[in-house]
Length: 225
Image (cartoon, rainbow, N blue to C red):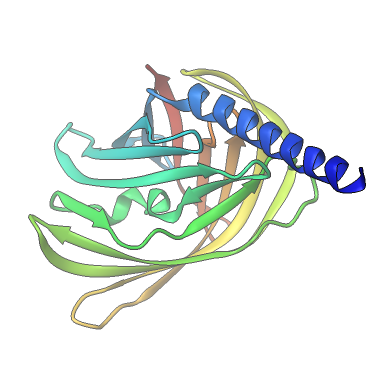
């Protein structure tokens, strides 16, 4: 009887995880999210469009198209989100700064993930992440981008309103370092990020990038179609 009860409990937990992940995947499937990147003075710099497509009951594929302020394509890439029941895992390729996109570059490389717990709470420390990303043009590799994200902390909950609507978010801060290597040579760039993460979207609706205490730019969700 004890073994039967344990088996039923395991099956019940697995069913709950599958149901929660299915709900999340179905909620974000088929969305077109448009972000506007602005400099510290509020001038438009770039537009990023992310299109989501359901791969299976736990995975969502994301295709990104980056355009400059005049609407000219300057980059693209593919990534994914995975639901495990306890966390949402976001492919770090989706964190490539838009400023690194030049000359219609394509992003590729092995998937590495940042995790967002589904039971997130203020004061929580989140896992670090590190990834090496290939940057290419028309199939030819041009450079490698090394990106490290650390010191991630959930500061508080906030409601954020943008042109796309109002969202219940977690305010998360972290430190990041990127190093673009060309011909084996690269100079690291260190910055600090504040993002407002919306659990129902599995991604941020607003982010601010700082160099020291100086605001460098923002990226804001402008529309959901």
